[in-house]
Image (cartoon, rainbow, N blue to C red; front, top):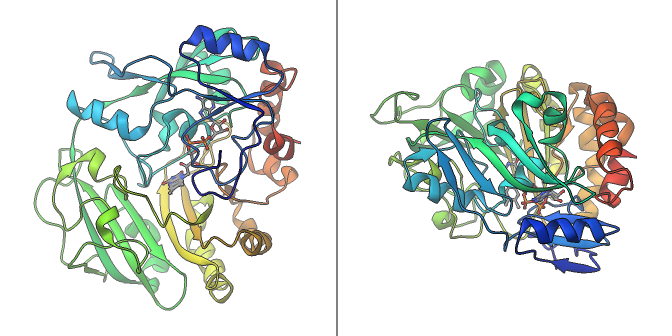
Length: 417
Ligand SMILES: Cc1cc2nc3c(=O)[nH]c(=O)nc-3n(C[C@H](O)[C@H](O)[C@H](O)COP(=O)(O)OP(=O)(O)OC[C@H]3O[C@@H](n4cnc5c(N)ncnc54)[C@H](O)[C@@H]3O)c2cc1C
């Protein structure tokens, strides 16, 4: 079994697909090493194990909305795509989505996955309760009111147990319009990135850091009371002009894979992701890396990476720049800092990319850049411990919850050391 990108073959001795939480508990209690596998969209070995790989697609459970408490209960194996369809059918929505709907809710939350928007927190921020099968096989529920243990566990790198269900905050459904703009001057971005990033519900820049123009800006606005009302998008976005046909972030790819653009309003689940559920997202044959750093350092970080444009060119398909609002989850890359995220979609040249990452990371180190847990990075543990004020507490939580290292794998040995 390989991951989505095909750059990793999982090393599991066996795969289990339990049909009930009880069956899952027995598997976990018996196993020496065990790990949940979500939708396999990570680019590193965070989900790997040499023991039992547990896939939750047979776990029963439906999507249940509590319309009074504005919560949805989600089974551990569900994807955002399927959740979105179920919510929309009943008139509900999530606050944000990642660039693709194909990923599992539990796996995405465990690695701190995010979308964009200056006021939008990471996807984990919607989590109000989470249920785990612990190393002993016991089932345990944590809620927001449980304080530290909850804040340490929601973004947990799969280290604390197998998530069987989550409760997420929902809001009434809303529509979104999406317009791509072309050729945004870098001078404008560098002069006032907050003005650019804040002009829309979700704003993404797509760039290769070369030249004086950012080739694409993806701007998504809510057409409900939470947005700027109906009407068309402006005919200029900070000096960039509206695209006249649908665009793919990669210039050479067909926009058929992308969600509807050109300002046509549509449901949140069909506009907030860049890529359509029924198509391959992004390039397909690719690798990814991403760093989140305080938004206040955005312009300096852009300048640092622009200085590397010549070295990026042979490796890079495209880079996406997004914003994420601060949250309280100990291991969230946007923990207690309003962040800008510099994402890199690499050509499938893993050795060359990994050889270059230390140079990229050194350029971003002055800005306290935290790597995305599910993508390629080489930041050593000592630096991670400095980047995350609650890192030591997380280590303590892992030792307490998994004393025999049942959920540990090579990734956690490396990252938590
Ligand atoms: C094309 C593409 C686009 C992407 N776009 C974005 C984006 O817009 N924003 C962003 O932040 N990231 C993005 N990512 C990264 C992706 O969202 C994360 O890597 C995410 O973790 C993938 O979820 P998954 O279910 O595939 O995780 P997996 O790789 O299957 O697992 C990830 C981790 O979660 C754990 N896990 C999975 N299920 C459970 C469970 N039930 N209980 C406990 N632990 C569990 C695994 O053990 C592992 O530790 C993208 C990836 C791809 C391939």
